[in-house]
Amino acid sequence: MPRLVVVMPLTPLQTGASFFVDQWPLHVTVLAPFETDAAPAEIARVTATALGGFAAVTVVAGQDELFGRRHDIPVTLLDQSPALTLVHDQLILALRPLATAWNAPAFSAREFRAHVTVKLQGRVHAGDVLSLAQIALVDMAPRAAPSGRTVLATLEAADFCMPDPNSSASRHSR
Image (cartoon, rainbow, N blue to C red; front, side, top):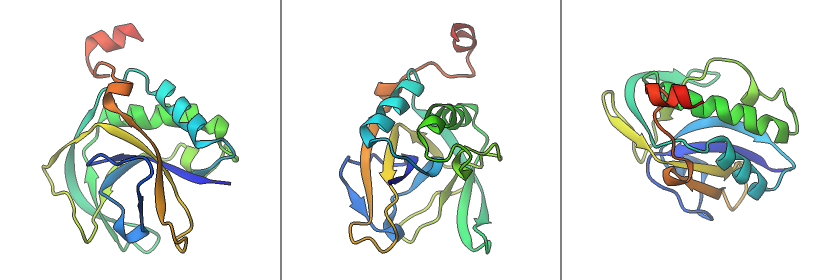
């Protein structure tokens, strides 16, 4: 049963691309890893439908913090973004029915803390303005898997373009 994650990469990814855990391209996780019996094409279709109308999301990098159980993973938090939070919330609603466990941590109501993990190959800095214009569905193969992580599907902002959720026009169209 696949374990998948939904991310918004800082630079576009290609469907079929693979990379090892320590070589993850910089990204924002918008839905934490979850297990599913659904085919990747079904997950991609449901994701596209759920995000129908979303535009690229612009966010600003904020302060650095340490994540992880041992607080040893350096990340840069992203300033609060209603648009990014809306993407996260829509994905929870849309993909929870396809998960093998509806109560998996990916679907919990805990606070969404958008961030970019600091990697050896790069990082973002406080004040950086980031444009997130792609959604990528990634297979979270076990760390020891020889293939590494694999991009199963991508959606471009044009595929999920909608007015800014903060604008008065979009509030009235929903």
